[in-house]
Length: 61
Image (cartoon, rainbow, N blue to C red; front, side, top):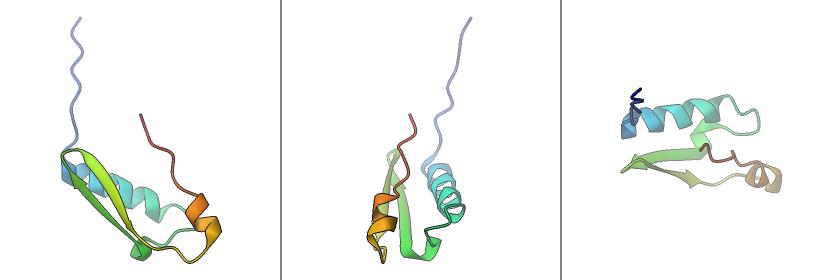
């Protein structure tokens, strides 16, 4: 049995993370920029409280 894994394109990764941020009640998507390059996602921005900073999303493996 052969199992094939489809690797997501950078645009798909970026969209997935942006959508996840939209569902996070403590975060505003306008505060956080999302980029994806070579399948690595980077979050860029500032949050206005310590609670938001400590409420980071866990990495998905």
